[in-house]
Image 1 (cartoon, rainbow, N blue to C red):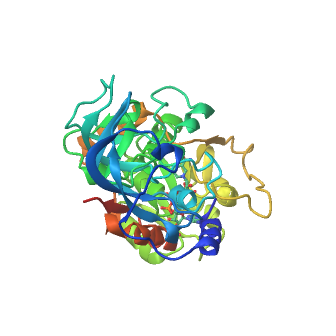
Image 2 (cartoon, helix red, strand yellow; image 1 turned 135 degrees about the horizontal axis):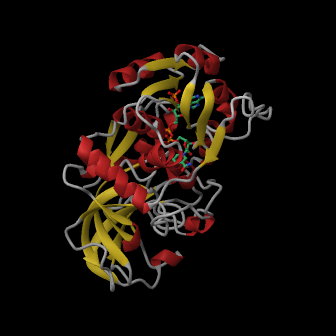
Length: 377
Ligand SMILES: NC(=O)c1ccc[n+]([C@@H]2O[C@H](COP(=O)([O-])OP(=O)(O)OC[C@H]3O[C@@H](n4cnc5c(N)ncnc54)[C@H](OP(=O)(O)O)[C@@H]3O)[C@@H](O)[C@H]2O)c1
């Protein structure tokens, strides 16, 4: 699903602003009923009815008490991914939008433990995997049944309940703010570069765009000793990506045949593509490839009007692999690498917790480079 889909549906369903600080009265949704609470009150943003960015609701609730296998986290920061816009607008295609509290990326401090929790202790600095049941090994479709911010409540609250199984401790030197940007975009880029493409120093990576996945993908590839090419619709964004480390840049709007241009600039094509858009750009990505290259399908862009022709797929012996995020082990590996290399994710804009609607609007506008962060009180 691309920005056009998000914008069309979001603007069609937009209705009014948030009702700031409204108190929750009684138990209405399944997740809100029958759950023991602490004595504390805290605020959460909930997906509104009808769902839309403008109809996100800031409400105050009795802070829930963690149950068996769960922890209560004081959230310090959270951030937004492309899919979160679809989830709050009610049209994300996977997971049936069961969550009431959005966002799959965040970080905070554990403040209470449910029965049987041994993975973490009170006071630990933690973040959480997108899919808490995918701890290691290969992906399987069932991990979507428990998906933070989609089928399970997410991070957009002052205090949130999370499954202990999916938590990852932050290493020393990784801040809450940095960790809060990684569960979706960072883990996906890590999975693509190091688990799938098996990137080696000296290889060339093409990272499409300048958003969350693209930017951390560029940073991780540079850290691993690769040469990186970035594409964008805007020259100012490309200039910033060069400052951040990109070796070569191409404006895909000014150069519609950008795949051939990338192949020319790199002297024969790239070894790895982070395909952060999806099927609409697949043919140009293939044109950018060197023989034997690996294209990792990350973006969930819609089918283009014309079916992809997949140039060079056989002639160049290309490898095409789709991925869905990554495991807890991959997240732990990513955090270890970030700490060891003092790598800081690019946070373009920061919003206060109360400004969550403005933060979603910023993502929708697409002016950001890297990540849009929300700082919690
Ligand atoms: N498979 C997975 O596990 C996974 C995980 C995370 C995200 N995703 C998907 O990955 C995509 C990116 O997510 P995100 O959170 O990084 O989004 P984002 O921050 O909103 O960034 C979107 C980027 O797409 C770029 N773009 C749009 N059309 C393009 C084109 N024709 N050529 C090159 N770049 C183009 C934009 O580049 P410019 O503005 O610079 O032109 C923008 O930087 C989304 O489709 C999302 O659903 C998938």
